[in-house]
Length: 198
Image 1 (cartoon, rainbow, N blue to C red):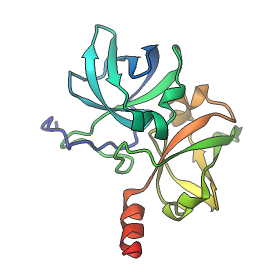
Image 2: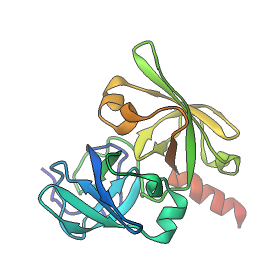
Image 3: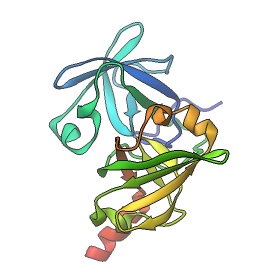
């Protein structure tokens, strides 16, 4: 059993629950709690975006949305009844499972393919090509907070194979081609790019 100490604002890309938007205003989002272990001040990744719990009710939790969050993510497009991926911040001793995800979305991409291929599902995402150098074939990417392994990486497009378990236990089962998804590229790639730019 882990110590329960949070690792800060670090996530793993392993979605713990799929919640539903209960209410929203211009700067506040209410989402069903789904029995997640949260309290006031907890960090929760909502569709891969690190947010802070600012209010709690029996069955819902509220998050404040900054202008920066609304401008860089798909959270501003959410409506009542929409499904979102939820992951509490990682805790010391917890198995990582996915990869290090900070909850800092780099850009919003568009689902161009989401279809069954044999026993699995094929996901294809198009995105702004200026982020292409942050993505490597068989590297890591978080799509709406889901840790996935990209392949067929091109200039502004990548594909991922999605196993049935991931499809059924994330909001992917409610997604369709044309939907906009939050993308967070691997933190190591960002540091390498920063080093090269010096």
